[in-house]
Length: 260
Image 1 (spheres, rainbow, N blue to C red):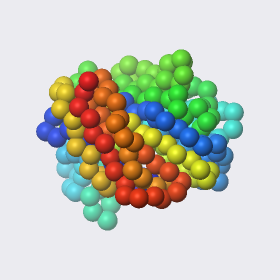
Image 2: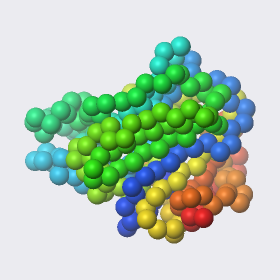
Image 3: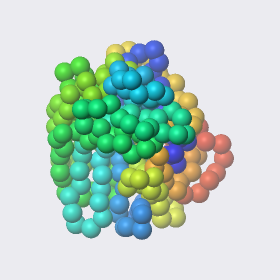
Image 4: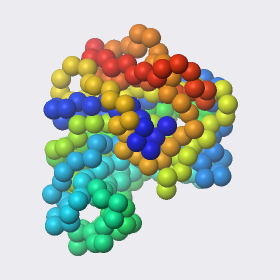
């Protein structure tokens, strides 16, 4: 899915300080192709859109933050970083970005990557069940981490929080495996089934809501939402769980759980 159609974990009115994305059950996944390239994909923990002082005098503008793991094809290195956006809320897009702040104007919005990032060995899509991605937003700095099996990678305070003031506005979280940027689609082999889990630390144990069609990314995958697994476990933080499959079946659902 993706392109606005994902389930998200919504904690309104509570603020999220950390989100954890994982794939507790993966079955039948053998290959993924994005942009014509084998084993290319991204993992994205994405925030909701929010009002931010970073827009300055630019009209029709909201903030958006992404915690990204980008897996390139071949034997190269994957990269873990944060990408911040000022998103245009009208079809006409932006003529200019706030000056002197490091923004690059892509028309549809202004973007910048975190000044630091982390390189790690490529993660083959068959390892997906052993992957956990974590994004953290704090007034002292924003951090991003990824665990692959027993190996852990990441960086604390990879950027300052003041780029968009995410820690003051984060109330919704999307997580998924999707195309390798630029609106690409991640195409999985037939028979693929992936369960997605999103935990959100908002300082309370109450279960989040799980609205449909509330995702924010422009990338997609070729999977369908199906019925969520029964009796998803309670985790350390409030969480949601949903399931995707290469074959559409029944009514898609999402299961929300309070913290253990």
